[in-house]
Length: 312
Ligand SMILES: CC(C)(COP(=O)(O)OP(=O)(O)OC[C@H]1O[C@@H](n2cnc3c(N)ncnc32)[C@H](O)[C@@H]1O)[C@@H](O)C(=O)NCCC(=O)NCCS
Ligand SMILES: Nc1ncnc2c1ncn2[C@@H]1O[C@H](COP(=O)(O)OP(=O)(O)OP(=O)(O)O)[C@@H](O)[C@H]1O
Image (tube, rainbow, N blue to C red; front, top):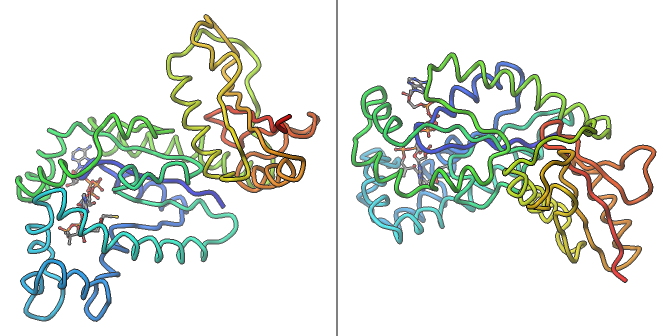
């Protein structure tokens, strides 16, 4: 299975992308839906919210009055923190249960508005960001969805910025056109990126690496940083150092073969063997025909090679 994170600011158009993927068979784990489940009547989640925000957040039938809670929670940073502190651990635990139930060949689509805010990007095989300018989102939320303008603005202010989302995006989908145009972009991502990624992962085979040099690309440093963060999430304390190295890490290079080379340093041979296992299980299998300790990604859209080195 592979795990794909789908995110974007409120009203960006995640639903259109999710629908396209679900129609093709994605295993959908929807954070907004889970967020509702964990505060249903009788749950410890609802009791904790009442304790924090008062009984005024309950409707006459004892269920959560969602607009009443939104009006109390999206007022300042402290209140949003309180809301998140109660709901997010419960959402996380339920998400884990659903992930564990996914079939081995699943493309798990984790539809999560607050992926960036929760620093979750390194835990996915790929992160997709749906982008729409905040003004256009506000306009759509108010005029098409009938949302209160102040509420929409307050939520936008409580969320990550476009730059923060861009920093973690492996795939950036622009939704300033029509929903059909967005769905077409999503379909292309599904067939050309996610399915090959999943199939390579199942086969334990790296995606082919490019061999021809191209002009230097100013995004290489940012891509390198994302690969390094992903490797830290996979390897944790098994690694002592992880660095983007080689020509794509050299800011003065005029051209290079567009492969992100990463060196993973480990303390000893036992850690090297453990690192190789973890990499192989997490989308960085061994490069066939190469020396031991050389791995490469299964992702055809982010060519990357990893060398495990034992510190001397
Ligand atoms: C405050 C609540 C009751 C308002 O409910 P409402 O039905 O109006 O909104 P809904 O849950 O459908 O969310 C709609 C959108 O609001 C935004 N939003 C929701 N919660 C938050 C939050 N804590 N911080 C920032 N944005 C948020 C997201 O973009 C989300 O997609 C609800 O949003 C909630 O319980 N939020 C806390 C849980 C959470 O963080 N959910 C987001 C997914 S992890
Ligand atoms: N390209 C588009 N053109 C016009 N309207 C759009 C477009 N994309 C989405 N919308 C409308 O904008 C609103 C928000 O879109 P949508 O519900 O897909 O966003 P979302 O990211 O899933 O929202 P949320 O963050 O609340 O989960 C909806 O009313 C939707 O119909």
